[in-house]
Amino acid sequence: MTPISRSGLGRRSLATLVCGALATGGLVAAGVAALDPGAASASSHREAPLISGTPQYDNTDLYAFVSPDKPDTTTVIANFIPFEEPAGGPNFYTFADDAQYDIHIDNDGDAQSELVYRYTFKTHRKNGDTFLYNTGPVNSLDDPDLNITQTYDIDLLRLHKQKVLSKTKVADDIPVAPSNVGKASMPDYTKLRNQAVYKLAGDSTTFAGQADDPFFADLRVFDLLYGGNLSEVGRDTLKGYNVNTLALQVPNYMIQESSHQPIVGIWSTVQRKDARGYYTQVSRLGSPLVNEVVNPQKDKDKFNASSPWQDAQFLKNVTNPELPKLIEAIYKIKAPAEPRNDLVDVFLKGVKGLNQPPKVTPAEELRLNTSIKPSMHPKRLGVLDGDKAGFPNGRRLADDVIDASLRVVEGELLGQKTGLSDSVDKNDKSFEKSFPYVAEPTSGSRGPLAKGAGSDVKNQLGDALQTGSGSTNIMLIAGSAAAGVAGVLLIGAGVMWWRRRMYNRAY
Image (cartoon, rainbow, N blue to C red; front, side, top):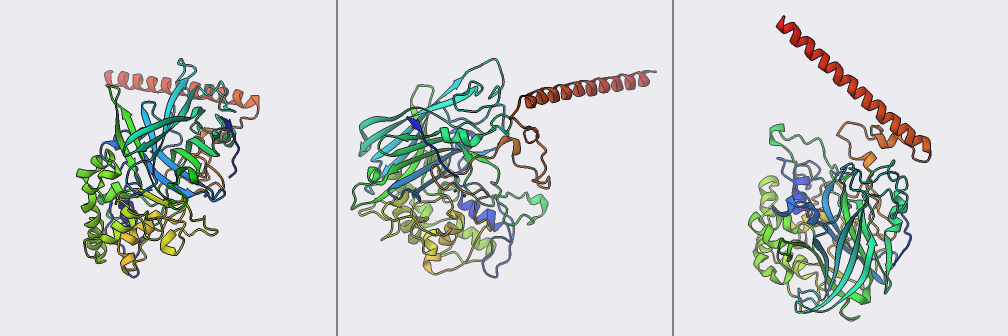
């Protein structure tokens, strides 16, 4: 495997749709005033009770699109570990060693996998006698100062009716791009990312590592004790947070059933190894916004453990959705009549004549017509705005799935035009123009700041350092030593004050 270079391009729940929007004057239907605030969650960020406690296995978002710069290929991006705080050391963010991260391809519409790309990871440690993730500035993925590293394998499984026909290793011991600790630790993070982009056999490409969370939305959760403060209209509350990304680019012909049937269904799963050594599925994601608000609490963990060919058990959640009733109660926008067969057609079958495969079995998958070329001028609302290369025909990074999904749920396809929006129309960072397309992660030396702190204030140590010369390290050591001495003096002064106070009380 040899690394290739890349150049620089700019999730989460129907609950987000409603709540990041319903809770604010930013989500406005013509002439409808903002009412009570609601709760918000993310596109599959912490979407079910069990998975919310195990973020390494939590698939936050799935994207699939015909590659804009290589239209004979399809790119699939699966993200994990929601709400990564960039400065979250000393133990930063790794993929789980006891998990299988799978990308499933259904290329005949039967709701079953014909192809599975399986990623498995191994963590390596150079020095167990330090608490540091890196013991000095890191200039390459094989730098001895990068103390904690990961590598991964990819196996391609070919299946028929859930039975494995063959298993082929297509990648072996490929390095993972590390968490972006900060400027002092990783002075040239772009170089590290470039080294983690690998060319595979058959004109395929892979990447694994940290990235900026590409999902954009207003995910505010209001405490009712604050009395419904609506001052944060249209704020991208995911700004500054990172995720761990798997990106895979493969030629279209490799995943199509044939040139006459170019529509594929895609979903991702995570299986976790139990104490007996068996793998159990704990996370599943296809289209965005499904398990957050379409499925009620009693079905969320069940959905994460299920497969698309079992989705008939969740059909009522789609035909009789809770969300439009909530919107009607809050906004007085009349909920469309049930059963919602329009939602079944769009989200379980695909749009007829666009991305619905022949003889389709209704199932929750992200469906993509790989024969539709990328748009020269993509529109954020995708198919709703006449852009057939966009959501729900697959999902591009810049597709505004919050606004598009909310409008469809509220009956846009039935003639009810609401114009609902969460007022967050794009990601805070520009996406890359070539693979892996996701933006680089926010640096740990410039993580999210508290509201009102001032985004231009260089109030973290890494921003004050220049790592290009030996004097920097001396300054760092000296600064740390000075801080330590100051701390000792402060503690000593505190002890003397306490003793003096006790003495005065006694006498």
